[in-house]
Length: 135
Length: 397
Image 1 (spheres, chains in turn green, red):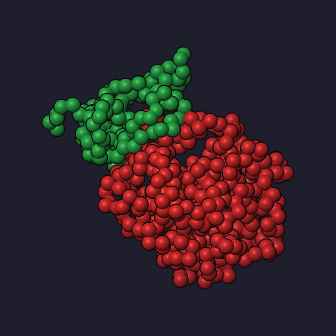
Image 2: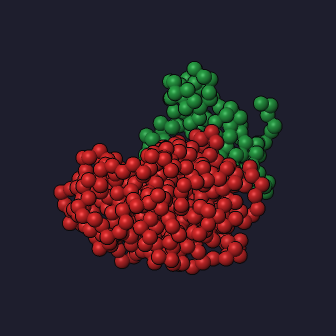
Image 3: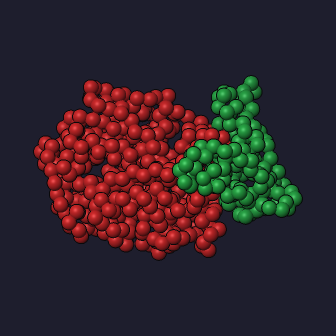
């Protein structure tokens, strides 16, 4: 079930809250407390905009247990406009072809389910950007 | 050739024997029986001396066999109850990492003879359970939770590679063709069948753009090495001595997305550079390279990061035939993970066993002509760990 594990991660999973390094200003996601750039303490919270673009993408057909119901699904490396990259599923794709560089935005969706009586895990996925927001 | 390479000391670490099981679906064999088969093969291969330590390389036993403490389990099962015995885990780099631990123990003088066994038993579970187990090699909180698999991660790298460099559709085919061609004459290989370019081009996709022939088949297998320090060598083994000229393990980020440049395998670059420095060698001195070809994109990226090709050009070595066993830089000379079969945490031990056979001149129809110096390198997931060894034939250059 891992209830406490998913609870601990709720800020980053639901709201895309990461960190900014007070020493070198690097934006950090997922949060890791030590800046990967300058190795100083970095615990200042930072709210990411949820906007980014597709760095690469592919389809998972043979899914791990807990994800079979959604297969096939699209996974991507998404480069956030603030700099960091993250791994997420793409969703709400419609008929639009996916391309490297395609603008996307964060939405909250169900990530996995552990059977009929199991817990549902929610978190971020990314969809094609609906409005061209100014950056 | 520098002084460093020719300087022989009593502290040199040697590989004095190898043993391997065929790679495949061993429904009739358990994890411990596979490991024992490899040890038994080793015992008939060389002068056997009771080792003081056993290092087991394994990745998936806790998930697929419900078994930890493989060190104690296998030592006991192999008639070695009482010796120091532990498991070393670094996903697909477990084998190289375990050999590194044996190297350190022997070089330190604390251990005289070490046994290293790589074993993986993957046919116990359904494919979704296997995918879930494999996904534990990625970042559980930030990658696996999104349903990503190792195959999908290789596909993300391959797609980006194809996006950044203008390459033909069949750019990676040469890696698969070479592996299958070499496996035909390897009695331990899972797929002893050559493939043609048409097979590659018509193969079904497993995760676009990774097709069936870009991905190595996961299978059961075990391999073993007996390692000793020169001054502790009990008697001369029946074959030429093979010396560990370099041993390096380097880590990088577990999560692919945490790398500023995912197409540059930093761990491979660092580990290779460290190994070349230890041995006093350059890529041009290497006669053959047993690299990590779990996915064909890894082969291209490894050739680039290790210094055998410039960035974006690794695939050309395959297309130009430079990786064949009689060409410039032979790779996967026994079929690699692609055609010998991918044995997870045991991969690095198969690589080192095959490298040893090449250097002893015992590779049969797989022999690289005149091989004196070989390099073996295995990766954990998409390069979170890189383990590199350079082996030299002791009467070599």
